[in-house]
Length: 279
Image 1: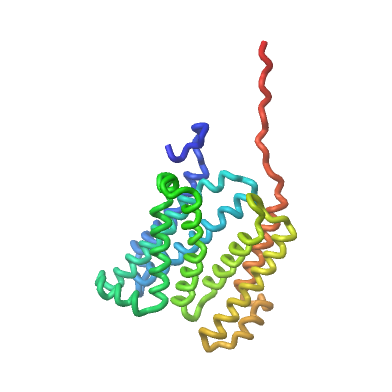
Image 2: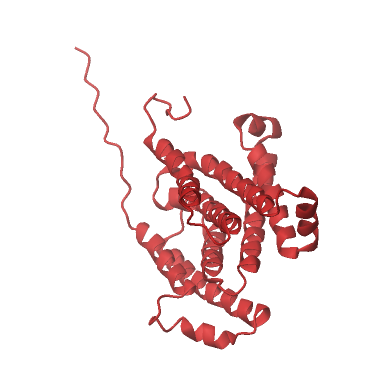
């Protein structure tokens, strides 16, 4: 049974993760059934599945930091499941886009070739397909550990392409793409500062939180300066004004500080039951 650990006990973390991965799709199906996706249901569903694909992709990248910071190695067991779900939502994203085009695959292919943001999104999907196809234990044995790890390292540039695609298609309102870009900056920074096999110390995590927050503000500034006609300095100043809510940079900083705080959580050790001495 895939949901049982080595001792044969049921693994609730895997079961819970498996169930939760269906929730976005079920909620989307419910909204479609209730007619809540109008006036453009295909576009709304396409956007929703794409957004969830990227959210889950970042969650999959957060598995290693969570495992190391919380010192709970069993968390790594759900990473493959989340990664396959990322690919499933990305495929559904493409199918819904095709449905919006009345499944005219010639037109879909033409749009992908001619529209840059669709091109990079499709390249990211192809990368996810390669990762999903090689995610099994059998493929790991066939490829060998070193080649397998080299291939699956591509999840990082794939995530960057997916975020760029998300930002381009979001047009004016890029609040969530900027938030995701900032979280990706934190995840990338964590990979750079984490020692082999363990979590960075508290000072390093605090520095990473500040660095990711500044990186988010910088990415947002660059986007508005290069991609829109809005004044990027006004957007940058908005990070200091919480009247209308927190900007993405501040949320990233809060998330980074939360991760640093988790570093202080003491490791829960299993209590050993002493063996009885033989009579």
